[in-house]
Image (cartoon, rainbow, N blue to C red; front, side, top):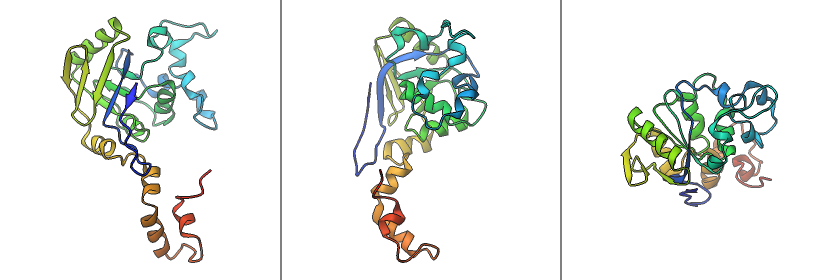
Length: 222
């Protein structure tokens, strides 16, 4: 798995994601299937990946069910291939967090719930769409070739696998944010610490005696 990481004063760009794939078939897979509600009580997102798709991966006695995320051949996959309206339901950010911490760096599908796609963007995870026919062909390819690389080109809006390259679509705002490295607002603020401090100093409700770097939050992070 590789991603394009351009270190520009700590700002990361995501122009391309490459890695093996894992197909999860079915329309309208909601966020409660991706991460059941009882796992939302965690204090941090650390360790959330092991609970991704938990209730469709295990029965009530924690015996594994037939699910791609339980198959060893897909264990190192970083490109998730799904169908229509993936991530519908609640707005819980835990859903993309669980997928990201399981190891997913990009999701390719027929369509996505808008809030889910937005939450993915906040993690630098592109959600790329293609036609139902192209997605079905890609899922079949991944099933038959679990060790094959899938290349998701966010900048050029293509997905490459085997000897094929298909046209894909990335939402314009998402593509701009990922390619230009403005998806991570925290990193962006840190990379513009001087401007943030200058703006903070001009605000009447900011203590004039406060350290500008404290106001920007750009330094002194643990």
